[in-house]
Image 1: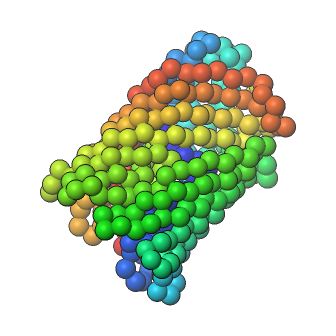
Image 2: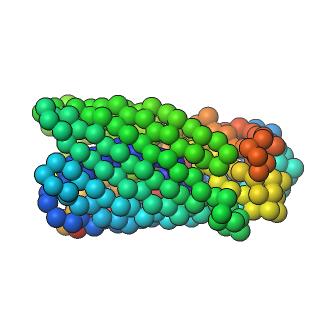
Length: 296
């Protein structure tokens, strides 16, 4: 919540998974997610919170009989609020943060129910007045999945270059239905938690579903030249636990409500070479979001 968020550097399996389920033809999609993270106490003193919005716009298309490709344009805007954070000298380490990016998901269905997905992505992630030239993060995720009668399960990995740091991580790619009502999935890519996690869903009937899960998110962004780390890097990391209530409407429109909390949170400022200048943990804080999405 990469954002309030959405897991910023992770364009994982759900996008490619949706590609595999689409019929022939072009399929545009759009989503908007306003989010609000309540104020959290910072361990060394002070508070911080976040409010913003996450937007996605793209199109999915078939290539031959067994492949699907897509392109997604992303814009996120996060407004951080700091109140006397002692770890950063009592001043806000950053202010408004924005992300502009593109991802290119590809899904290929092979023989014997095996499939794979590849999603390269590039994002400019920066404090609003920071330069664009040093704000580029890029990388890709890859997953291999096995299709069963009740869904698909697989494993994947991601590698990303994130502003003076390279990160690699594994993940489980899953969309599996245990019964008519119970299903295990990755969180919605468009939602406030980001897709780096798992969610257990229960179909309530009448196009409503209830879910609970957890996700990890990490934001790294270029700072402007005015704070304690001029032209350095700011970072927020946290684990999110959440409840999700979703409603599907005609014409592929969905409305998803999220309520949760952040845990094990950390704030960090590094210099322009990636050396740590200041870091502090923050206490759990409530988190709210709603996603309005449509596919055509």
